[in-house]
Amino acid sequence: MNPKLVELDIVDLANEGKAVAHLDGKVVFLKGGLPGERVLAEITRRKPRYNEGVVREILKKSDKRIAAQCVHFEKCGGCTWQDLAYASQLDFKRKYVVDCIERIGGLEEVRVGDIVPSKDVFFYRNKMEFSFHADDNAAFILGLHRRGHFDEIFNVDNCLLQSELSNRLVAWFRKYATEENIPVYDVIEHVGYLRFLMIREGKNTGQTMVNIVTNYGDFPDEKKLIEKMSAEIPEVTTVVHNQNGKKSNVAFGEIEKVLLGPGYIEETLSELKFRIRANSFFQTNPRQAEVLYKTAFDLLQPGAADRLLDLYCGTGSIGILASRRVAEVAGVELVGEAVRAARENAAFNKIENISFYEGDVKDFLNQTEVDKNNFNIICIDPPRAGLHPKAVKRLALLKPEKILYISCNPATFARDAAALVEAGYRLPEVIPVDMFPHTTHVELTGVFYAR
Image: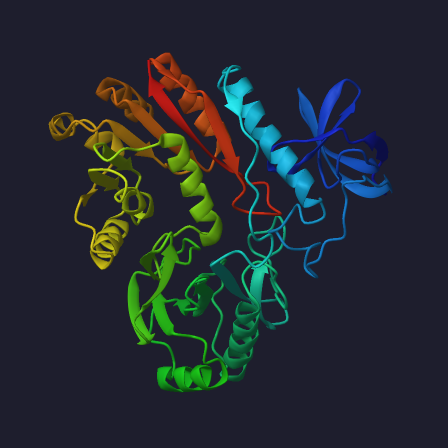
């Protein structure tokens, strides 16, 4: 039986890019469709306060709709907004930030500045993870996830996110692994070998890393692999093999072996150079990361006498960049490998007024040494979950003059902002920054001032 379709007018876009319509007095969240469009939709789920559905046909197109440039757009789970004009993407991202600040944070006096667009809207990523897969006919696949399906992978021919070199590497490795008959890992049965192909690039240095993530065991005929890759794609500067035998399907290795080159690539941010290893975190859009950090520092206005505590510091990029503007920096990070990378990058840039500590932020803030050091500025760049409630309370007790907050999740930022304002801080302004064009993600930064 054919599903019953209803005509709906799309009036807005919600978080995660879902289209918003109304039916029988209830909101309907739809997959597909843009504001200003009239569509035929199937209601797939009914809930007490709202319904969910899927657009099956567009009867009237929006003037914001454009032709997606990627050949994989209809099936890929990546660039979900590639059919929305970039100027409109920016408008909806800023609107989402405003909604979070006002609705979740209850902070109607905060000014939300103009969103800062990305310099590059295609080929901006410095890191891509491609998955290996074998379909029902045992055909070899190396590519990306189908939209909404964790266990379905399609072959990528021409992704517009990283580089043409990246596309060449994917095609080359797919051909090599097929010819060498190297078995693919099965995420359901947890057997097989090849799991991920990760490509990392230095956008400002031209260096390229290939990281092959497999199940346990040495890579078959490593010498042949390196000889062929070096001959056919000489732009590759280092090759790393990571072994991961855990059931969790992540491109992370427990055992690492360098097969070619130094085992890292280098990238520059604001004239400083950073070493990036296979399992290191680094901003995925490095050219826009420079813009994000400059925007944050312009708001913060740090001085030469300031002492800055950098929480959730990762591999140290924010603290290292800030070290040139302040008297002293201390960074705190839970992941040991990130702390080691941060120390390496500080030494690499000959920065002596910075130190790094491994530990949980909420526990570190409870140490008496934090009080003794008397940091007058605290910088926080937490994961998407935002600050732990205990960390918020401890921040307020430390009473820094300024708190610089950089966030990748406007919703948790708004929640934390409300708590900091209640604790005695004021937040005059936030500025959204677009780090990931054609996706629904948006970052923002703001400075809290002690009253």
